[in-house]
Length: 499
Ligand code: ARG
Ligand code: ZN
Image (tube, rainbow, N blue to C red):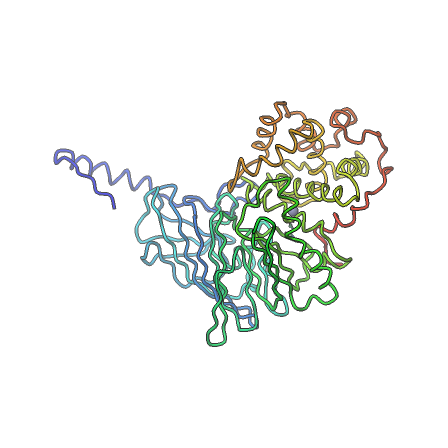
């Protein structure tokens, strides 16, 4: 509480001034955080530091209920603020007092506290809720996946709305305690370390903790019947993996891939520096999805990615995101190249490590296999637009740009940049512009035209640009270079669509 001592003479004046001034300055927080790709995502006026989710989920009926407690700080004088959420809310409290609430837009929960909140105030928001996530949609879609024995929340950029109220944008990262009660015999998997479990009256509660800043889309929940394996990386990071008990014929290939998590973290540490989080691992639920997601510390994999046998390349991709995407998160969704370009490039490094094609061969192949009139080149990885955010060009052209950068600055500077970047922006957010600036600082070179040609032009970089960046030095004609051996495995990381 703040109390000011005011000289009696000033009192009347200050009262007169204070009332209109405060009434004018208290206003509702914006319904979006200001991302031009997704104007309604996230919210304005506050910053969350911690989510405490205490939930209960019944797989038979898809009923989820619980209480979310958010610790936040106001960033403006607030009369009202929003959370992003789709389930049914029964009560909201702000700093202990009942708050009124209403829904608006596609996924806004508008909260009006009993008393307006001055800028810079720590606040505690408690939201009690329940609902059947599979019955909720926004913009006509749902990303909540039901499985025969449970459900999964894992998608990008939208996943949180179906299971917890949040400031749903990577700019607002926070720590998490996720506690979920499920019927005995069923497991609840989330991010970080399993602090404890307890069982009572037919329900088992799993208490998970993710103790480093985490973006909302990187929080995950999986309920189902899993086999759980544990281990440690060479540096002592605890590994927890989980496999649905009904992966059928994909079970062996899934395990033969994901059980190599520790080895791959060790290998990636050589390129990116120390692993940034308190735990690592992955889970393979029995979903029909075709993509994987770099959910922080606990990667989501789709069984279909292992349908043709083991695939360590997809594990390399998702674990690379732990540094590129999770530790250093994007500032805006337009910065997706920092996530996907580098995760794809690490797959190329792994290909070279496995003797299945060098990064240069893969870059030359991508350059040569798309003729200049291919729509591939109309996508700008440096600012692809929301509809092409996960277009193949963001990945393949994005990784080609990384090779062009490497050839321009030389291996010493390149590998210094690769390792220095996660350290320079640890647990924060950064943009493509920030990356260019950092690469220029480390290499001592001006990189504006290189970034422009490879990331920002809606056309194929021509022969002179390719020559300069030592791409396709053989000046191969489109489609004439041999397909590197690793190509099929690398492709399996792409969003596989159901037939
Ligand atoms: N970041 C994910 C990956 O490349 C992309 C997932 C996008 N696909 C989706 N259906 N949400 O690993
Ligand atoms: Zn990715």
